[in-house]
Image 1 (cartoon, rainbow, N blue to C red):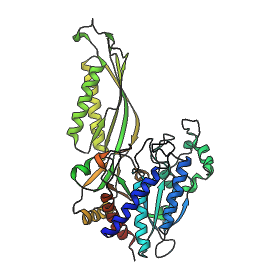
Image 2 (image 1 turned 30 degrees about the horizontal axis):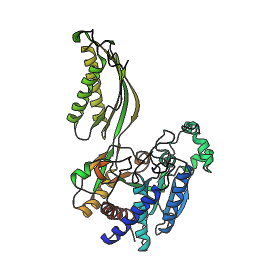
Image 3 (image 1 turned 120 degrees about the vertical axis):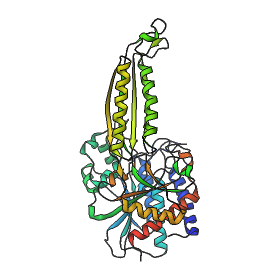
Image 4 (image 1 turned 90 degrees about the vertical axis):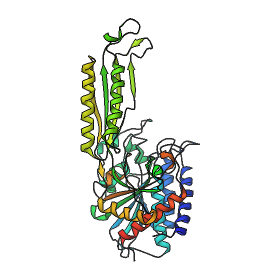
Length: 416
């Protein structure tokens, strides 16, 4: 494990490097770095340089992921994979993704300075596209690694009409070589990802670090209550078939039922459209979206079924029609229990207490966990703010994270 002094020095470098990466953006005054853009390739080159300084040899794979490898005692040994992503949303914060890549480099740097190697090698990956900002396809980088990249993705276009295939060619990559990004299962023993929490739980618990139990599964629905529009002044209240009051009643039920279902369950009505949308007309139809998430698929489905039953009950009671369409589904991704226990032991050593919590946001670990045991370490972020320029972490928290991560990595690779 890193000493407190070494971890503080390493954390300071991580923060400085996050600042340096934040300057690589397509939008002046904001941080926006999307898949296969010139800025993405520039960030890869900068990170590769830092990997090389830490004693690693580096390469960029067929989908644009940047890799560094620190050999074990014996060349060609199986590797422990560490990392996160280097792409961002638009007008992003500077720690989401980048912190995990740069922290991993510091762990290797510490081993390199001490002339330590393990029975396993370490590989660090800066994934090319986790956010899906450019092409509205998430996990492009990690799905390249797992070999679960559909050929249909090559035809997807960005807002400028540039396809994924064209973007690959413009970046000097060959769309016909996508399959070469896939790595054999035997290459890696496991995957660890350090990431900011992107929520307020650790801050509220006054803890720097937490161990992730699972990445939430989700369903997203488009829903619609249909009643009858009418004159706001002439239709008596008891005669109305008001779609908006039905939606409002359902939204209250969604909130209360989700609270009662447990602290790890979340549900959000994110959009609401009234028709015809006039101040003096009773809403005849209302469209709304529902996003419901949980680290346990069965509990999420039970809550969703209850909410849909309630929506139909409300519609029947108010003489309306209710319809819904599920347009997005992703299963929950449990973190590997032995890896969780390894991280928990390291966190306990560093901060004396372990808080386990689910991740409400998606991560590259979703894809990687389909092929390799995976686990995640969360670092507290200020007020839980993420995907925003105000995203912030404390250098002292990063130092604690480096101590815990270095301890877990050293044990997993059996340093000598």
